Image (cartoon, rainbow, N blue to C red):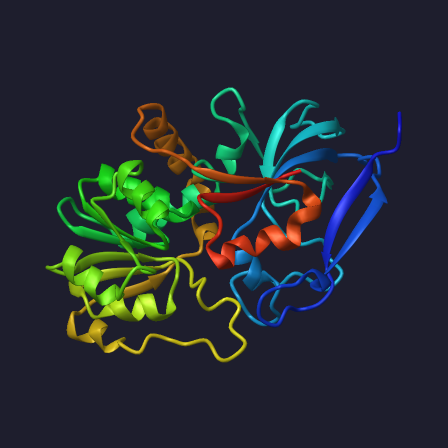
Length: 334
């Protein structure tokens, strides 16, 4: 059998501002055989997520930074092609965090089997993967929405936002989105079931919030931060809950990150702002997967992916996240 070649992107430098191709090293190396208790996975899909930008930075965070010279961390989905592990057989499909590469040897830790007969494979990196888990637990456990409340979601058509908006609708809430561009806003309303969506590129966000959230916001699920978070803070209601999932507007800043200027609104309204890191809910992932799969089977929840082919395109494809060019969950097809 011909020697398999592993294509890998390794972190070469800590980016300043937007990552550029020179911040990566592209390598092609022969694939080793799995040892005792190991398995070899052929990666089929790689998840591209805003959190990856934070993983490139040195310093304290909720997870260790990717080391210089290491394969870039990323969620993956692939097929087992060789196995010396008792729990994994050749032909199994597995999800894990095996990085930006075409093959990976694993001891099985952190790998989860998925069934391609139940859903197309990319769904396991979207609604049935980390974005779905993040949206499910972030909204229900941290946001704690009640039927009839107004839930506002930034990056409404993105990987996490689309799940949050649909679950909020299922739970009987009035759901308003914020997105960039008429196409994304139309998708949020017509396909995801949002009651309305504010196009922040079209006009002042304050005007959109006044129009669509006239009585204020009970739950704000924020994926963007910056000016959008500041604007929403002026519209929150008494006992509002703000879920800080991400701050993509700040990830490539070359100056100090801008915190909320209107934070005293939390005091005035006795509101709560809380961050979410999905790994904290790992023991309950099964609960979320079951619920989301049932909603999908019933036609109550949709999952949109933006799939780009070719691992060689990784440095440029990643940037789609920060330009807002992607439409749905960004995935690299190997």
